[in-house]
Every structure is written in C-alpha cells, then in structure tokens.
Length: 278
Image 1 (cartoon, helix red, strand yellow):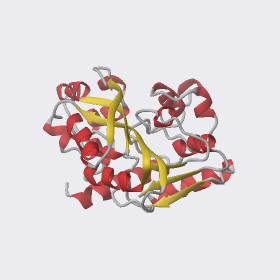
Image 2: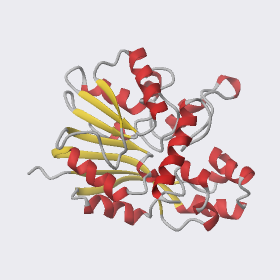
Image 3: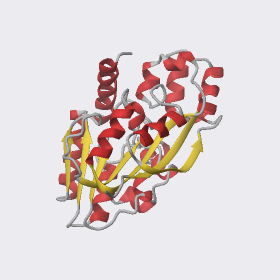
C-alpha cells in the first residue's frame, strides 16, 4: 500500500475501535464471559498493574498496547510528557498522575474519533494537566525542545515513515530528554500473505520493521544509549489466542502454517534512549 493509503486505512481502523468495534493490537471487546474485563486483563498481561487499570476513567483503556512504557519511564514530578499515538488516553492519564499539578502531558493522535474519546475521558477524570492534539507522529504538533520524555505504546510500527517519527521525537525533546517506547518488531520476515493483509497492517503486524532496522532508526535520529530493556516472543500460542490471528485465519483465509510463522517472527520490545544534553 502507498503511504497515504496506509494512513487512511489505519485511521479508519482506529476510528472503528474508538466507536467500539474492530481490533487494533488488542482485544475488540471490553467484556468477556463471567464478567471479565478483557481490556483490563490484556493490559495486565503486558505489564500494567491492577492499580494502573483501575485508576483511569472508564473507556480510557482500550487494551491496545503491547507493553507498559509508563512503568519504565521514571517520570518525575513537574515534567512534560508526550505520548505518540495517545488513543483514548490511557497512558496519558497514568503519566499525569506522576507529573503532578506542576507537570504536563500531551497526547498526539491522528484519529479525530480517538481524540474526542480521550477528551471526554479527561473531562470525566478532571485531568487539568493533560491535553490532546490532532496530528501525525511524523509531523508532531509540538515545539522544538518542548518535552522531557516521549512515550509510545504499539503505535510507531504503524507508521510508514519510522525514520521521520524518531527524527521528530528527537526534535521535540529537550536536551537530555528521554525516549521510552513499547512496540512490535520482527526478527524474521513475515509470510507474503500477512504482508499484503490490511487486517494485519491495522493490527500492528504487517507494518512492523525488522528489529535491527527499528533500532537503527532511533540511533540515526541522533539518540544515545539506545537499549532494549525487554523483549518478548509472541510464541506459537499466538495462533490460538490472539483475536487478530483468528480474524486472519477465518476471514482472510491465511493458512495456519503462515500464522505459526508469525508467532516466531514477531517480538514485543521495550526500548529506551536519550537525547544529548548539549
């Protein structure tokens, strides 16, 4: 797909999630059998605590993440935090609790429906230190050297211009600022059937870069001390438990063998980096 087509497809997919349907990097339902909140359980599975998932407004956690960048970020009171692809505001609200009244959190998302949902959630939770801006992460609506910390959770993989995303992140950070992201990468190429799948792109698979390419993009943007803090394999259980895998298998007729290869190829990583203090 061409870049503009990719953006349009992703924007449409996440608009559907904001409205309560569809699946992007996570479960598509907020409740399961026996009263279980699927989104909360999905978030706890990737590193969030009970306190995290219960301390934000209802509707803020859509279960879309692949890690918990806030837990890794060592956020300090009074800092300004920028969340790339902020969705309904989950990570922004957790960060807001840490920066305090003297700090500020900025969420950027390109989907108007998500922004509307996030702003509603901010109002419900009376978050006066959080704002949400419409924009693309390749062209951030923030000033140079404006923020102390940038976080992102399973979003940068969706961009067809990952180099530009990290260049923009570097620009927006103050000298000595930090980058903390959770994302999806590949350790081997995906099967061709998955690469061409629209559903796989929206669900953070087809757009994912090779791990070494992803890390090089961060380094080439000027970041120092680029480190993979954690790396998790999807494993063979991906085929039987992941809602996106089921969709690909049932609706797009992707073979079980190809899905098994996806489980071996995909990794969830948490990466930290810093901007020079000069």
